[in-house]
Every structure is written in C-alpha cells, then in structure tokens.
Length: 307
Image (cartoon, rainbow, N blue to C red):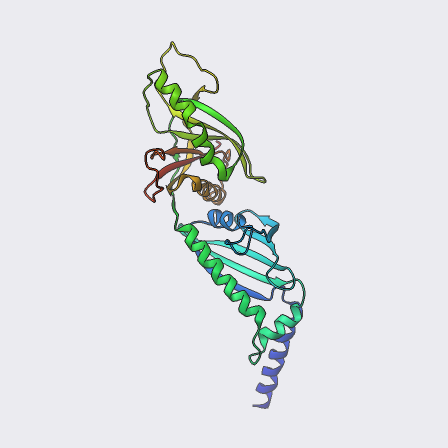
C-alpha cells in the first residue's frame, strides 16, 4: 500500500512538473464545426476581433498552414497577449474537429497554478471559457447562413459562349458587390442587341492572390452570339471551354459563396489532384429579382483539374 501511495505521489509530481514547466499550452478546447477544414479554417482566419460587436481589431495572424493549423495573437483578452493555436481535422464530409490550444504570454505559471488549484477561482480560466463558448456560438451562427456540399466524383464543367466584364483587384469578400455594380453593363448590352440568354450567369476567376485574398474575375452572361455583332466598351466576348473539375453546390447569399472554394481546394489536396486554383461559379438565382437572400439560392462551383 505504501509503495502504491509513493508511486501515485511520484506520478502526480511528475505530471505537475510537466504541466507547469514543460507543456506548451495552458488550456485545450475542442469543438466540432460543419463542413470541411477548408471552410472552417477560412472562417476563423477572417476574424479580426474577439468580439464581433466592436470595430477594434485585436486578433493578428502570426502563422498559418492552410486547412491544417493557424496561430493567432489575441489582444485585449487579459493583461497580456494570448496565443491561440487552432488545429483542424476532417471527421467526415460534413464535419470538422477543431482543437484550440491557448497560452498566455505572461503570467503563464500563475495561471497554470490557478487552473490546478481546486480551491481558487481562476479569473483567467473563467474568462477564457466564456470567450470560447462565444467563439463556438459565433461560428455556428455564421455557418447557418449557408450550406456547402462537395461532390464525391470528378465532373465536367460546362462549355460557355458568353459576353463578359472584367474586374481586377477585388477583395474576395467584395465579389458580389462588384457584380452588382457591373451587371447593368452586361444587361444593357443584351437588351440593346436583343440577345437571348443560353444559360445562367457565372463568374470565372482569372487570378487569385491567396495571401492577400484579392481576385481578378470575369462576370459573364452566356448568350447566342450572332455573327454580325462585335464587342463594345467594357464588354468582351469569351469562349469558356469545358474541363474536368471538382464540384461544390453552394446554397445561401452569393456574397458568401467563396467559402466553398476553400473546401474544394482542401478536397483537391486530400485527393492529391492538381488544380489551377481558379474557380468558376454558376448562379441559378437573380438577386435583382429575389432581393432577400435565401438558403435556397443556389450556385454550382467548379474547380478545374489540371491533367
């Protein structure tokens, strides 16, 4: 009995030493999120403040490995900056496990002693839990605004003859706003020449700076082009060839449709497929007619595979 007690105390002492002086992080929090690691990684990467109700930015990204892990420095959380280290792991096609490791830059030893002490209330850990529960609720609420389904098989994207308008150096989050600004140019061209649509409007990304999250894209209307008309002003003619591609179906406000791009990129990486990284989005609803965004709004998104 005495040996068992000594062994128990030794293990307790070693565990305490490991936690207080060796373990890298103070606290570990695990939760689940919808969709794949690509979407979840990007969702959290976009957060610039701990509290979405204030405008002050207090989160800075210090390191990231896309779709796998993300390190942030969080300010205005306690007396000193706190490091958030996120890890993302796919559980199935519609679920990602998210692990958050947290470490205080200062007072780490005092914080760990408070965490270990069952007789002392830790303001650090209590505040931490409140923020993490708010984080989880925030992620859940934001993901309720859209739905993403990634196809299991490789498909063929449509071939399209179309008129297009090119926009450059647009933030990814501003894509839908830019489309609204330029749609009149295409619609006026169609109406003035009495052209007929042959398919749904679409966006073709032609350049994507993923570090800055800035894109160049063509906003296009498929039409049956007579031989006797010519491009005019900002309207260009394009022939978009079909290609083998990964496909996602997005439902929700089109200003959020880019979130599916990241799950497509993750899927390509997972399947060891080489892509050009330039999605094509085909839209099935007209925001000018259906002014209220709806979860029933649909877009098919194709990520071309490079043979």
